[in-house]
Length: 546
Image: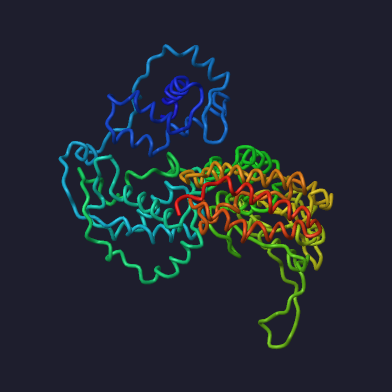
């Protein structure tokens, strides 16, 4: 089925000037087939992501390229089109057929039925998001399944646009959560709950009842298949029913491509190689550290990788995704193994107990067909070489046993991914112990103000505000160095949405100015200079109506 979309994709991109956004490509392809298929058949194609998956395959063979969020024909793609441009577009012979229910829905007359109000989906959506970042299709599908037994019969009907009432109203609810500052689109279809959303969930979760949201009406055409309230919601993968655990891990990782900077995604892929599976024949040293200025998404990126590869939204002590944080008091005994009081005995006695690193290594070794991920937050705030000890050898030479202090051996298996994060303003990478640096791949995360522009795209003066932030970072880079620039997350706080200009000034007063006071503690002239410059730049932004 995927092969059928090669010619339409290349044709659409050629007509769009050789480069375009995915949605525009899909819209043009739909125009090609508009008279040859029913809307529900096209909805099936979109649901199964046939066009998007074909693009991934074309990219692998060099036909397509382009930056994040854009599809572009390469020279190879242009040669393909010159050779095949006169080939006709044919409707695939294995085009998805319509079920009787779907056919009846398309041909049935419109009627009005009772459905749940859109607000009914807000708390269930927040419940899902409370477990971690989710792509919108997965989020909508999950909520539809959560509410499957509680929705009204009308919620399973199809609205004239060709989707279920569930899909239509759940999508509306996501937009409402964003307007309320309770959820945020962190880019490329990924959503995350905010602190405001968590507070609301704590207040309303226990008393929430779907029965409160009856009494709404919707115009529909027909009934979808029984017990399938989410039948028109997009799936996470085109053929997920037959996917094994390790294949699912790899597909989940592939889904991260649109959520990360292209260069960052490529660097991570090259280092940890999810594509070769959890336990390849030649063991890999899957160790990586994200470094960069404050607020550039280092912890977010580490969490995203852990969620994708381990398939768990939050870390736990006995899960496939685990988290530790280094600090000045953290020791080898805390991390590897050491003497600990035995609280199960009436008299005080000490025994050797394994630390979190030994524990996850053992768990991963016993489960070689799945990925395990250990995230070490603030890895440079402790003394990593001392904390790891002889485990540094085992990190590099995966699968080889090494004796550890206190007795026993340690083996770091190939299916364990170790991810560290470090704030480069606290300690330069150049100052890291050489033995540690050669065991880890280092990936620099720079401030990406495009994320700010995308998050607040509807803000009236977002272009001017991003320009001011860029000027501030340029000044900091020249005065103090690149590691002192401000990351984009400073400007993504849902408590201070940039659709209100005053919130930019609040971020300056509450977050930026105190930080600059620390940076420029011994440079009072520099601090006064940047204060004056900020005031001048801020005057160029229209405060809006009084």
